[in-house]
Length: 89
Image (cartoon, rainbow, N blue to C red; front, side, top):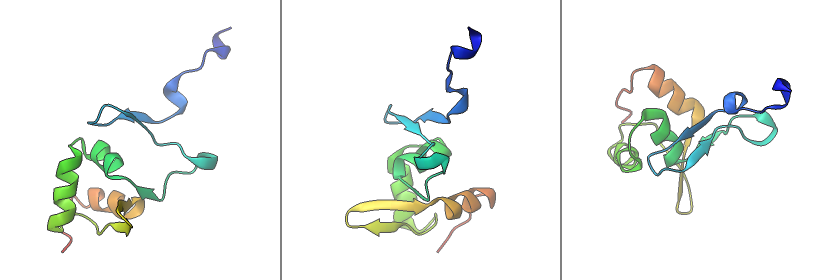
């Protein structure tokens, strides 16, 4: 009976500043290649506005713009965080 109880331990779910749940699991169990501003804000524990300011000032990896959408490459963001968030410009 205990095995039939599902938990969120198998899924990486966090709550962003906007209050909505951000599910890190994606199609076929692969992590997303491009992150939204909400995803990056959750990773940095800051607001989405602060992430947008970092993008505008060049203090984070360059975003990919698809029309009006702004996405950041996961690999670049993770490396930037591992390098202690140096200025990127």
